[in-house]
Every structure is written in C-alpha cells, then in structure tokens.
Image (tube, rainbow, N blue to C red; front, side):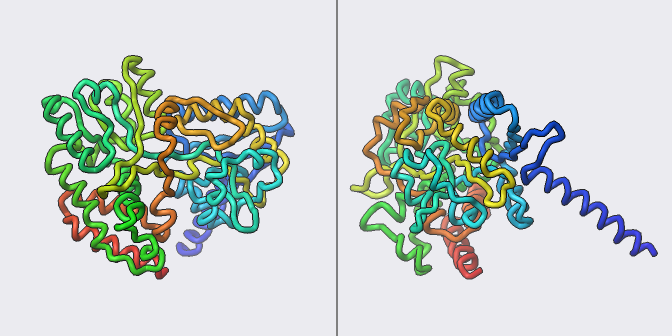
Length: 420
C-alpha cells in the first residue's frame, strides 16, 4: 500500500513539474488575448541586461498584442536548455551562444527568407549558414575575444599591450614589481570555473593552430593529436601562479567582483570581457578599459582575435507563433536596436548596414587587420570538453594535477568523448 501511495505522489509531483516546465518553454496565449513568446538569452552582465530589456520594452510598446517573456538565467542557461531539448519543449526564441548548428541545429527554424539576412556580415556565413543555405540564427552581435586591460595601470607602469606570450609574462612581472603587489597582474575569477575554461580555449588557438610550424588542426579533427603538444599551456598557467602573477584567491574569486576591482585600478589584465569596460567606468569615470587580441605563442606568429557568433536569436521550429517570432527578430535587427545592443554588450555588430559604436570600438578599429579565429573547442574538440578544460584548469591551480598530468587527462577525455 505504501508503495502504491508513493507511486501516486511521484506521478502527481512529476506532472506538476512537467507542466511548469512546459509553461516556461513554448509560447502560449495569455487570458487577455496577447501572444506570449518565451525568450531565453545568455546575457549576464548588468549593462547587457539593461540593453535587451530596453529593446524588449520598446517592442512591446509598438506591439501591444505580443508579450515577450524574457529569461536571463545566467550560468544555469545550458542546463535549462538541455532539459528543454530532451523534452522537445524549446523556448520560442533562444540564444545559441556559439552552437547554432552543432548543438541546436535540429531545433531551429530557417531564417533565410527574413529581411535581415541580406545584411549579414560575410565573416559569419560559415558559422550561421550551412551548405544548403539554411540560416540558423540572427546574430545580435559577434565575438572578438581577447584580453581586457586597465589602460591607466599600463600607462602608469610603462607597459605596452603585449603582442606575444613572452611579452605578456614580462608585462605581468613589471606590474607586480612596480606596483609593489598592489595591482593584480592577471585576475582570474576561477570560482566560476568556466572562466578558466575560457582562458584555455582562447590560448589553445595560438599554441596549436595559427602558427604554421605548430599547427595541429588536422590531427585534432582526425583524433591523432599528440596531447604533449598542449602541455606548454598548463605550464604557462602554473608559471604565472608560482610567480604570484595571478590573484591568490583564483579558486574562489567570482565574476561579479571584476567590475569593482577594475574600477579601483586593482586589475591590470583579465580575460573577463562583455560589459566590464562600461560597467567599471560607470563606477569610476576615470577608469578606462581596453581590449587586445590574444598574444602569439610562437615566434613569428601573429596575434589572434577569438570569436564567431556571440549572442543570437534562434526561432524554435515548432513555435506556435512563427509570425510573431519573426516580427520580433526583424525588430531586433533594426539599426537603432543593433546599436543599442552593441553598446550594451561592448561587442561588434554583425550586420553590414550598421556601424555601431561601442565602448571598445577604438580597439576593434586599431586591430581591424588581425584575423578572427573560431573558438577552439567548437572546431577541434568533441562536445563536453569545455567542462574538462575548466575542471583540469582548476585542479592545476589546486596542485592536484601537474601540467603533464593535465595534458594526459585532456587526451583521455578527448578520446572518450569522441567515441561516445
């Protein structure tokens, strides 16, 4: 009898949970007759949130018969979307955050017939289009990831933005010495371990891809890569830690601390990007944050931007309100809204009919001849390796892995995940 009662309670609880998930996912009709579209985005910084909330409010004012249910779950985004994919109950509109084809491709509607497509930056063609011409998502902006730096700090201590890893290490050493330890040369919020994965992902490209003599892209794709070639990267990170060039609290520091520390001139370099610059400057108008491409690892190689799609809007192929969803996307694609999002996210626009200025525009123009390389993990690693980069990076800082053991573990997980 007890088993029967337990079974009934479980079924009821699961039904309530499933219904709740369903209501949060697919579109629905509100009682007042409005169409409600669910919209999930990975935006997380305050400046980014304010920008998209402003555009959504403008759309709802112009279209009083449509309500946008905006969801910004931050670090929980991927887990939430995985649950929704498994249930085939996706949001009407959602951010593919770099995985428009590989992860979300079978869930998205084709946008090739929409007006905005004629203005897509050709640099994103291979990322957002396939060989059949299908367009997987609308790009709110595009990524040019590198290294952020405090302009005032570098000028104070006579440091130029480094072009190579050797110059980068010397710059960090100079700042530590000249500031008497008052400034953290390289600040890493490793308490949010994905930020460690971000560093490894960005630096892997100049280590094993862009230099002609040290290019292992084909071997990574076919599975024959010798992971000892990856070891110089964890060796570099361990060297920085051992020399006291990164924050002592690297394993507990949180991302939200970045803005205040940068505003106080306590950080010289960081891989934190997004709206860090404008957010820090809002706290302290005298602060100026710059950005630069990732330094070259090998002599004779060039710097690289790391990027591709950043924030996007895909439309669920089974949405009950495709016309309303398209209407919202076309609204987002209007030049004034693209400019607003570029300013809010401090990222370059992705359309040719817009020349949006943002906080980092002068740096994007300064380095406009630097090539944009795709994110390392999206091209060369099997799904699931991002978490491995993050956790092994944590273990290195915690002294539970050596650089050689880190590379070995990466190789083991790379093989296991490829074979799944």
